[in-house]
Length: 287
Image (cartoon, rainbow, N blue to C red; front, side, top):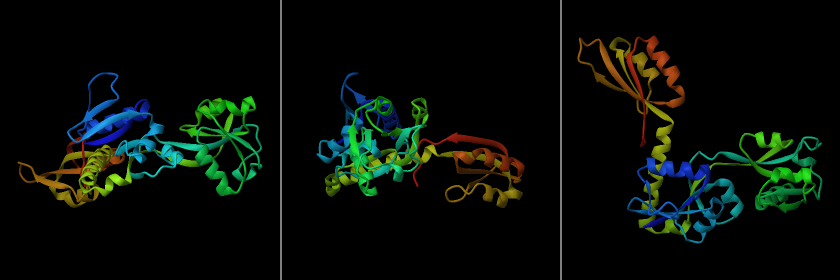
């Protein structure tokens, strides 16, 4: 039984649980307040703060975890990233008051005071630049720090930038891009049995992520224009062509297409005389 550390609240927690359930690993709780859940026969989930997950993994309290790349970097702990899940996208940015003359990190004077809840990443960033700054660790409401005289600048997570604008702050530079990641204790990969189970888990999660970016398309197309249809529907290894029970003038073409190309694909198929076009979502897709 392998233990998986998952975020206990927030959008990261919701999306992680949805991903695992779609992969066939629905969390079975003994009660609403339970911090443990069964994920199929091979895994037990523990629900903790996302920021604590790198510690749980590195200390061996859990074998696998899901948390943000920003939190992994800030922890500085030895964990191995196995999969970028793509959700929870944000960036760690350096920002200044709108009235500031600072336009580039090189403009920041030595001794500047920076408020952040990511002191480790911030310190490493400025050390690499060769600029000595003073770090003011805060646990929240970072955006207000410059207006209270607590700090000259801030380093904080940004999604759309609206919170910065509301607080009359301007982004100077992105320090780190972050998404949710599957991380593992390196020692867990040294055991052949645990390694196999972890690899099977990653494969299952990947199949869901791959499927979300694809659609399954079926259409009846004129047999005489089949070569042109093949150019429109490359699929994974080309479209699957099925004979239609008619006079032989039509065939059914089935293919997996990129979700963001469905509109254009349908238009091109219609121009070739396709009929009965059907597009459906895919639950899981293995390469």
